[in-house]
Image (tube, rainbow, N blue to C red):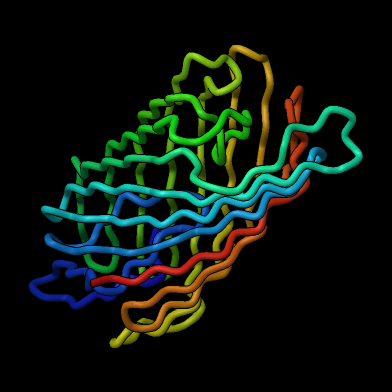
Length: 260
C-alpha cells in the first residue's frame, strides 16, 4: 500500500513512479522503491495503558541495494513514565530502546494496466539494547526474531495489504502469531509531482500463544504526501483484549518520511 500509484500506460503495461510510494502507517507494504534509494523516516508512538504512558521515537534508515531488496536499522529513543498511583511501579526511564534490524525481499510481482500485486518475505530482529520493561514493541530488553510474509494489491483507486508472521523469543509473553490487514484510500487524483492525501484503515491481530492471550487493534490514519516528503498520523485502540498483561487504552502515531 502506498499514498499513490503513478501509472503511465505503455504497450498496455503499468509503470509505477517509485518516487511517490507511501506505506501504510502501522502496517507494512510489499511494494518497494527503485534500486540505490535511501529513506529516512520516523514513526513516534505515544502509548497509553492502565500502567502509564510510554513513548517510542525511532530513527529509521532504509536502503535498497536493488529494487527487490531492502535493509533497515531502527534506533529508538524511549521515555517510560508509570502512573504514580501504582503500588510497586518500576522506575521511570528515558534513553535507548531495543534496536531493530529489518530485511525484506520481494519474491513475486504481477503488474497489469492500472494495478499490481506483489509479495515479500521479511524478517525483523530485535536486539536487547534497552532495559527490560516488558513493553512489547517498545522496550523489552530481550532478543526477538520475527519472520513473515506481506502481500499487497494496489490500484489507482485503493490498496490492500496483508501480513502474516511469527515472533519468537525466550520470553513467553513475546511469542506471538501476528496478522495485519490494511486498506488505503487515496482522496485526490493521481498527479506528478506527487500531491496526495490518503486514508488508512488498519487492523492487527496478536495471538500470544504461550500465555493464551489475544488482542485485536484498529488504527485510523491519514497521510499527506508532497513530492518526496510524507507526513502521517494515526490513532490506534483495542477492539478486543483478552488476558493482556497491560491493558492498552490507545496509541497515537506521528510520522514523517523523506526519500533520497
